[in-house]
Image 1 (cartoon, one colour):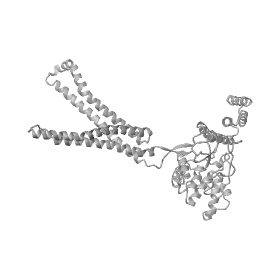
Image 2: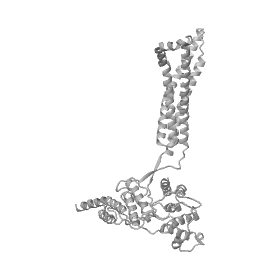
Image 3: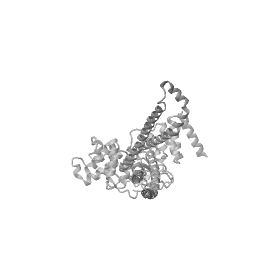
Length: 486
């Protein structure tokens, strides 16, 4: 949830919708008050200088070395000096010794962390075939900090406080990509992720579910009532069969006439039971897909769509047939009525009642077809509340206290094919725990994946220094040496 909210907040901030960005980012902070990047991006979504200061101080309290938080506070000091009348001018030095910042600001709370480009360490050697860039990238002017010092991130300038960077590295190859790009031009990786449209109204979805489940319940109740009526009628019929037969001879009579009784049951009762079973199945399917729709699943949506489309086609076909036959039916009844009156017939046929009944049936068919048509229209409008939108993936790279956190996060990135991000995480893990052979072995493998064999061999050698008896590291080292010699 925090990742999706963070990505949605970043996308909203990028599009200039600060109100929506605050809504998403507040969710992130409420779930994780120690998320430095959440507070930093939240500061860029705020309008009140006091609330902005609280967000920046929270970020600085979490990470006293955060240059982005210090720059933001320095800018606030110049723009709103009244906010700092009780503080000393030296923000960077005082920040590290300051007491804990307020736990939560009066305004937003942000959940989820964004990749702090300025805090990511550079690889030992630049990735081959990467374009170089000097100075801040276009569109990277800070909205809060007057002038930001460019800090390298894979040869990309960092974003300022609360700003979504226009230049991001490709998670797989590290190539520079613009925020608006959806696919890396160098390796072809999809740069977007799917996230819920959290601001979309869910009312059409609920209304469509109610309109679907009501007739489904009607079908179910009708089926159960039909079963009950048939059971009672069959019981009465069997009683009438043996009504004039003495009690002691009834069993013998039923046994002697069992074949005829079965024939009556199969010919008259079984078809009605089959209709009831069909009604029951229709009702159960409608209830199941409606409940799945209430749970906002795609199975429920498409199941409900197909379910209502089927009935709309059936009742629509009947409506067309009846519409074509209604005029002819009324004319025929009128002709019969005139013929009967002219011939002086005394047949007890009420043609007006028949015409009224026919009209009622036709109107019922029209209404039912219109009911399912309206349900289908509402389902079409409900799709946006169920579908997801594609937003640019912004990695979460806040500093963690131990190497295990960075290593595990690198494993997650590696499984998703995000080799460059995995390499950065494992570099951090090695920096925090340089004597861990597992970290160095993993970093060597990802260096090899990133076409940096010399760095990979160095990591394998250092890993073997820490764990000389590790067979897997030794095999990977020997394989790489043979590859380099070839």
